[in-house]
Amino acid sequence: MEYRFLGKSGLKVSALSYGAWVTFGDQVDADLAYRCMSTAFDAGINFFDNAEAYGGGQAETIMGQVLQRAGWRRSDLVVSTKIFWGGEYQGPGKPHRYGVNDRGLSRKHLVEGTNAALKRLQLDYVDLLFCHRPDIDTPLEETVRAMDHLVNQGKALYWGTSEWSAAQIRRAYDIARREHLVPPTMEQPQYNMFHRDKVEVEFAPLYDEIGLGTTIWSPLASGLLTGKYNDGIPAGSRLALPEYGWLRGIVEGPDGPPRLAKVRQLAPLAKELDATMAQLALAWCLANEDVSTVITGASKPEQIADNLGALAVAERLTPDVLERIEEILDNRPKGEQNWRGN
Image 1 (cartoon, rainbow, N blue to C red):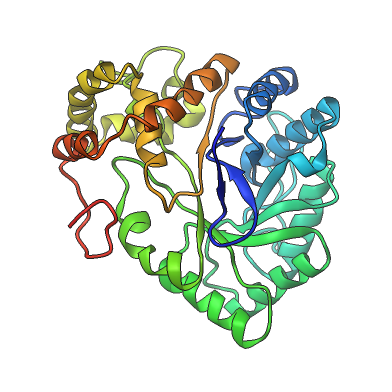
Image 2 (tube, rainbow, N blue to C red):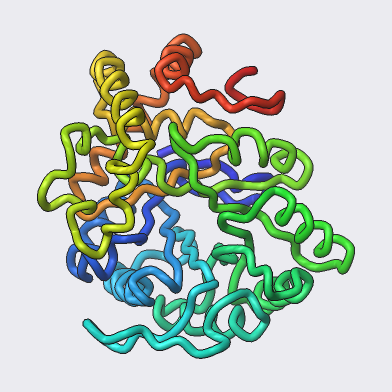
C-alpha cells in the first residue's frame, strides 16, 4: 500500500480508501461489512469514510459494529464522518424523522450531529470531520467556530469540507486564520475521468497556498467507468435497484451514450496494461499528485481485491499512456493550473 500525506498536514492516509456510501445498510449488512473492511485493512487501507446521511445513520452503526468486532488499534485507523443531513433513523420501512435543527452547519447541529455520529460509530473521536455541503443559511464564521470547537474538544482531529467551491474554502480558511481558529485541512470532491475541472483547475491554487488535501469520491463515476453498463443496465446492478433510480441518468441521460463510447474506447488500452477498466480508472485518479486518497466502494471483498490492483496499474501510467487516455477522453480542463497539461 502507498501512503500519502493529507495535503500539507502530517497525517498519512492510504492512497486507496474504503467508503460506506450507498452500500452499508442497503447492500451490505454487518457480517459482509466486516469481511469487506477486513479485506481492506489487511491490504493496508487505513482510511474508512462515512457520513451521518449514509443509510440514515445505519452506515455508521454498521461500521461501529465492525470496528468493535475487529479490535484493530485505533492508531492504525483514520475514520471520517460528514455532517449536514442529520435526523433520526426510526427503523426499516419507517420515514426518517427530521427536526428543524437536524440539517445544516449551525453550531447546534454540528455539535449534536457529531456526538450522535460518534455514538453510532462507538468512537471517542473521528480523525476527519467534514462539512458535507456548504450551508448558505448559516454564517460561515459560526460554522468555522463550531468546527474549531469540535477539534479543541478532541472529537475530531482535522476538519474539512465536501463539495464546497474553492472560494468558500478560501473564505473559511481566511476566517480561521484571522480569528486564530483551526482552519480546514481537506476537501472531499467528486473526481473521475468525466468530472475533472474542480480538482484539476478550480482547487489548484489551494494545494500550495493553504495545503489543501483531497479525499476524492466517485472515481468510477458510479460504476460507469467499470464498463458494466456498456450494454445497458444489467439486472442486479446498483442502477437496477429502485432506490437508486436517481443514478440511472448517468447511463440513460444525454451524457450517457458519449461517455459509454469513451469507456468502450478505453477498454483495449486497459487490456494492453493488463488491467480491468475499474483498475485503469482508479489508477488514473491516483496519478494526480494532488489526490491524497481515492475512496472506493464495494459490496463484496472480491471487488476490494480487484480495486487494489490499481496500485500496480498506476505505476504503468507513463506520460505517453496518460496522453493516449487524454486523446480518448477529449475533455482536458482549460486553465494554466491544470496539472495534466495545457
